[in-house]
Length: 146
Image 1 (cartoon, rainbow, N blue to C red):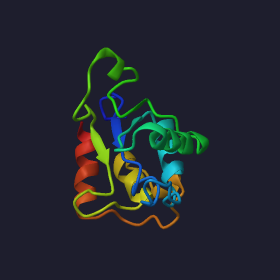
Image 2 (cartoon, rainbow, N blue to C red):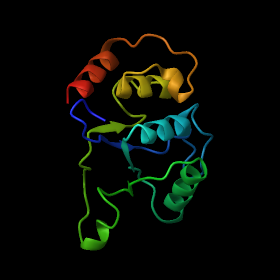
Image 3 (cartoon, rainbow, N blue to C red):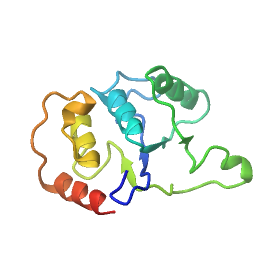
């Protein structure tokens, strides 16, 4: 949650972010990805899966995450059922995007947890921990000020 108590909404990519990119197959889970997403949900973050997958490939990704204990608020839409109301979002109304195609690449899931919560990354299972630096420090400061 933000400093004002509102719940933060995060869009998360699948291929290359939650799992190694083996599209259309499902790659191996990236270290601590699902554990971190569960920990973020426990902290009150709202997770939306935002992926290019469709049809049975999308179903397989959702099932993979569900088996790992992550249930998304919505998939490829701002809220469950948005597409049924004739809306097709080109961009999600979220606070943060987690994607392997970020500028600078995808940090470890421990760094992601730490930057979003301000807690040590060991909370999400990344035992490396370490101090955040540069861009992630600025992002965490910005998030906590919201």
